[in-house]
Picture 1 (spheres, rainbow, N blue to C red):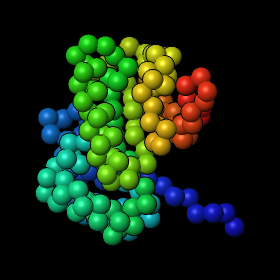
Picture 2 (cartoon, helix red, strand yellow; picture 1 turned 60 degrees about the vertical axis):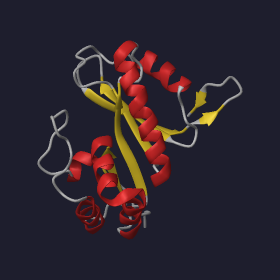
Picture 3 (tube, rainbow, N blue to C red; picture 1 turned 135 degrees about the vertical axis):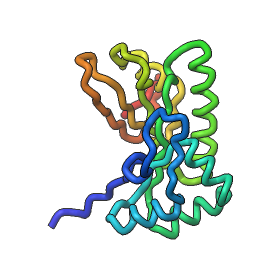
Picture 4 (tube, rainbow, N blue to C red; picture 1 turned 30 degrees about the vertical axis):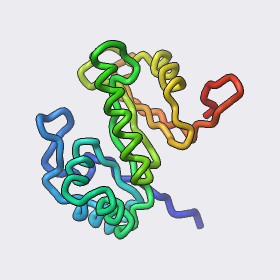
Length: 174
């Protein structure tokens, strides 16, 4: 008999009538309802985007959100999706602010994964060597990274990295 697979419902799986990059990406469904639906469907975790998380924290507080995750059996919690973290200039400044909030709130709520990726508006092939170098510079060893981007051939792809371990040369070992 094989072990039960524990799966995490990404944000858009349960968000409802919203879509990525819309003017408002906050789910019309209360967070508790989405956590309960995830639990009933057999999911072991849930993903949230920063705007939706901050909205829920505004309504319920950090402890209220943490209790919802715990009460509904959400063992795994992921924040989605940090973009432009490998760029320079204004895009990078905005991304660094989001990253700070991801790490701060994620730490308070027991975040397991931080999903990172290329901007959906950037039609150039993802620069995976630069992404890898930038990720190595800004790693947080206790978090796992999940990198999404576009393959040079235009196909979407996702790469999941395990827990990052520090090596003597300061580069991630995963």
